[in-house]
Length: 271
Image (tube, rainbow, N blue to C red; front, side, top):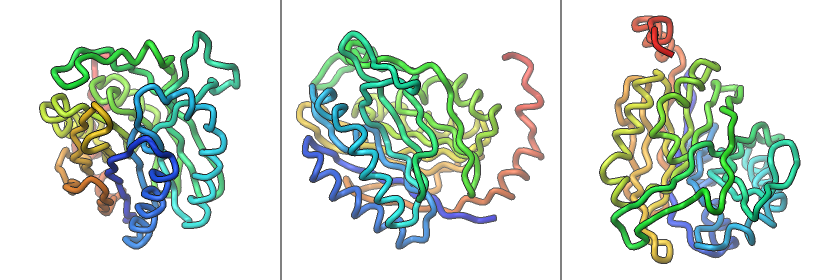
């Protein structure tokens, strides 16, 4: 079975309406390629410092708008990330924080929700200097996979890529495709973005779909270079523009041959 999968690159700013216009245009481009899935970047609907609570208050309205677009264009979406004011069980996130939530949306409904587990509390040599996501965000604690007509997706977000244990847990749960919405800083992206996408693909023998932010967002600069990586770590396609869709064919049978020829999961001894 061959299926086409798409990844979007964006340069999202602080206007939700402007960003939604770009999202719909990117969906249209993806559909025109014949893709069944489009992965949007982290912070795709609003990329502005200090706006997480304002955006989180609109979480359900934004979710409904995305569900409408998925239905209208008959496409699956990985809705990058949205700030969410409540946990998966419906309880409010305490202490003035929110969660970084990635939604998997089919043409019928929202199929799954993943809350980013690894938070970016890191000092970086850029215009911002330091990032303390845990000040504003509560981490999730549950790996999430979701079954689709074109394979099982394992959901990841940005900084998660640095932790192979999560990717391997998703593979153990049956993942064939890893989705990675991201907003890598320019310095860390330049050093490690492509390497991490390839490493997680090689570790898990999964396709990896890295959807990135690109350019300036106020004082913050992101690296871009959205990419599709196959199950052996080959970069199949890479974005070069601030707003772009890249598409490639996913061959499930070929992936199964790769895994059968080198059964890494069966050979693992340290867990």
